[in-house]
Length: 287
Image (tube, rainbow, N blue to C red; front, side, top):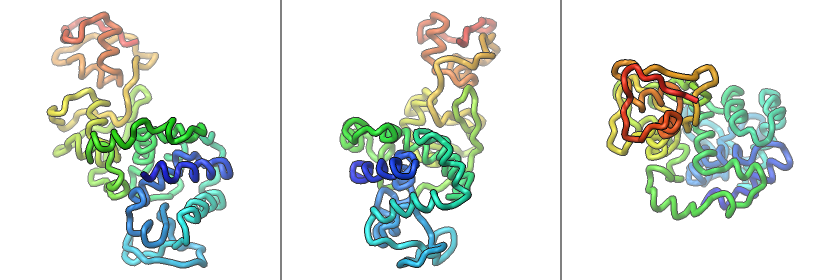
């Protein structure tokens, strides 16, 4: 497994350069399709670094343009070391090294802003990989056995929907949703023709996980205009939102989605049983 094979190398990069191990691993997983891409197999290039200012061996591959030049390495460790040096020695990435080495979100957004990748969802894909596989624990110096619990079992039981390492890096943003936040939680708005599967693929996460974030069943359909959370909702609403008066047509689920609150927590805050519906005019506590 890719993570087990390279996490110590990623931790070494964090210690020597200050780059979060989780980010190094997430980029390696994404850019190399977990070591299965043409570039990683033909040139040990796990980070998609091109030939700019490169005097070493080269390999050519169709990427954003046809026949682009990429760096070739003798060993995978050389790719990891060059990736760290590449970030450390380029001015456009310098502000990232002011971040805490455990701030994987800051690093993900910073890499995208600095132009590491052209994919508009690149930062969110990295964050999803980090969170899906609990890679942030490696930033804290934890071992593989402490971080990935029964990962092989999860991989085989979930199937390709949730844990398909082989597909990482091949996902394309066919519909580039605008990512917004409510209550500090990221979401997108579904457009005509969207499905939970489409949005899950865009942000490189499993459909089952996406449905869990949005508290819908495996058979619920996605309607255009619906809010779709791509990270876990909170236990309470923002501080400025203390209560909500139920309006005509609202449900407990729709209210939870509007405020970015977990549905069960909304019920608990109002001492309601989980099968009760939203009653028109009732004032609900939100925190």
